Image 1 (cartoon, rainbow, N blue to C red):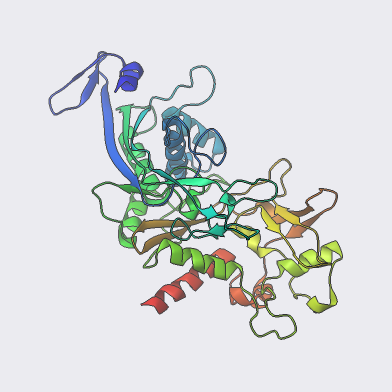
Image 2 (cartoon, rainbow, N blue to C red; image 1 turned 30 degrees about the vertical axis):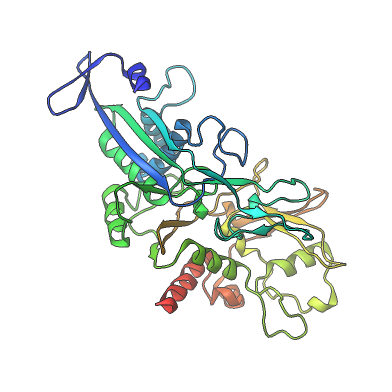
Length: 416
């Protein structure tokens, strides 16, 4: 508790166990122990690596709590982004003089876990093989080696840690107890630690607790969140957000995700395996590499899968095919747009799937760029109902995220 001592100075314990500073201010405290249900990927100062000093860092936990506070409590800004920043800073601090946070975060790693490789090289094979016992290869693909980066990155399994928080009972404009308990609940339910948490890595389990139910999650969203008041562009969850608890394992959800995003033709004798999505044909059209065997082109000329997050790399393997291209956000200097889709295991055979609101593709546009950066094209993302009818995986749904949720619910129903 040394950091708490430094943060709050001398204090005493009053009747009932509460801490009180010498100036009479009561201090709220929380202590919780967690284990990770899924492997920890990255999270250190070096990209794709766990921290060499502490595999889970207090600064990282603070950042997670900050994000999830904003995602369930940002409605208090009443649509004003500046007000949101001020509320957030009053609880979590801000850069610059006088911007220290009143919240003290202390973390103790109980078990560092064991380092494992999610991909392994086999003799005589050009590419590494994924290890589904660690993580589904489709979700773990950033961990496998490439020509540019010859490292099969490891993850850590079996990590456990203890978290302690302390905060003054009063902060101007906020009730710290309500705000921090909301942030803790949202992080414990939807978030994780390390990298790729929206794909289920580093998923937390509060020791001694049972997995939440969909009904329980809805009740907490009604308690902590609201439908209105969110500033534009702030990812958030409301009581009416699309949230489902599926009776499927993390691996089963990952396989469904792969199957949906990679839907291919099985009955096209001329070109078996051709994508049922429009993007590959549009890349061929834009780059001028439309081989006759791929005619006719897909009737839709948009890139709807951008709504799953960016960048997307298009790689074609046959001679005469287009060069490698990347679909990225349209904003200058921005190469990444986080996915609104959360695939988050809650326990054995139970996975939460949720869609964050307020985080779509800006302006419904994206940029397709060749890897040598010599050519680029602005492309459209948002579909009309007529276009959605022509994309077989969507079944007429204009939003690919909602279409995937429906596809997943059908698979879960079939399993029953």
